[in-house]
Amino acid sequence: MLVIMKNDATEAQVRAVIREIERLGYRGLPVPGAQRTAVCIVGNQREVDDSRLLSLDGVKETIRVTKPYKLVSRETHPQPTVIAIGRVVIGAGKPVVMAGPCAVESEKQTLAIARMVKRYGAQVFRGGAFKPRSSPYTFQGLGEEGLKMLKRVREETGLPVVTEATDHDNIEMVEEYADIIQIGARNMQNYSLLRRAGLCRKPILLKRGFAATIEELLMSAEYIASEGNPNVILCERGIRTFSDNTRNTLDLSAIPSIKEVSHLPVVVDPSHAAGRREYVIALSRGAIAVGADGLLVEVHNDPVHALSDGRQSLYPSQFAELMKDVRAMNRLAEREK
Ligand code: PEP
Ligand code: MN
Image 1 (spheres, protein in one colour):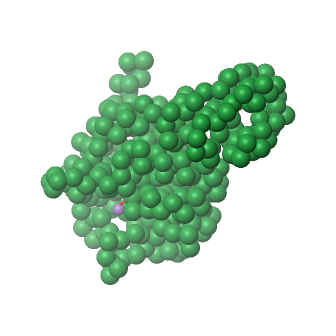
Image 2 (cartoon, rainbow, N blue to C red):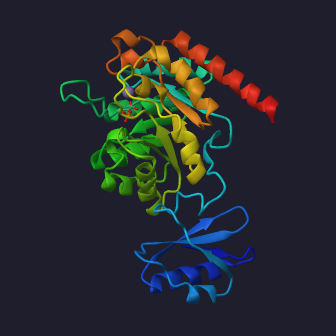
Image 3 (cartoon, rainbow, N blue to C red):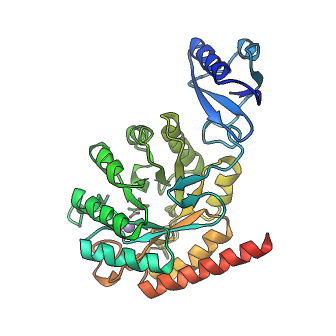
């Protein structure tokens, strides 16, 4: 349930509502909006008796939230969430391109790719220092050394960086270095890690699990939001289907479906969906056409020798072509306004 406060409600009145919700045995989380503040009631198994709440000063009305996820639902927060990382704004209309290698391999490689993607127009640098690999015998990432290289990237290029936290042991360290913390597809339902991510002060990029429904993805985002971190960016990265022409099947319908029910921004990772660089540009165009708030793309200066996901990593010239398409689509969107 949502308790909608009057436009002129005071902070003290909002606090009184939260106290009353706690007295009833639930939690009350304020959801500030452009026009009014709402207080979202979480933790109730059954319908809440709203009679006491409605009699409190400053309360306008109560609204039942019909979805199992509350804080990330559009019912609670009708306006889209906009997340600003320095000058980079995600969710405000213009797609944001996050690009870089699958993994940070060395300082030289990382800086070379960062300079290149920046030159072509990327706004965020991606690169994993902790890698969740299918095989324990493959490259697992450089760990803190890799994070330090990402710090160098930010210092030199000014690009904010997104990098993955794979477990409780490294999330604190990742938060120290990252501008956006990635939670990977394999961890989408690691609920204790999600709760921990909810305590972070940095935005979380939450990737959809390869067998997860949209509702499950949103419930996972709810775990993060319910611990106090409202800045969640969802990421569609392909799901497992019978189709074996690509590594995963990119579910482009997820973007309008999520936007219908949630206010969170959604980006698309065409690289892990395709598994092959040949399809990445076409899928990126599709992603922008269906309303994605950004792209997360793997790019490498020497994909053939990449230590992970080289087959799906774009060559620099392909990334340049992709950015040309993105700009053309942005111009078209501007003209249509
Ligand atoms: C990645 O971004 O490199 C990655 C491992 O992604 P996912 O969790 O989607 O497989
Ligand atoms: Mn990868």
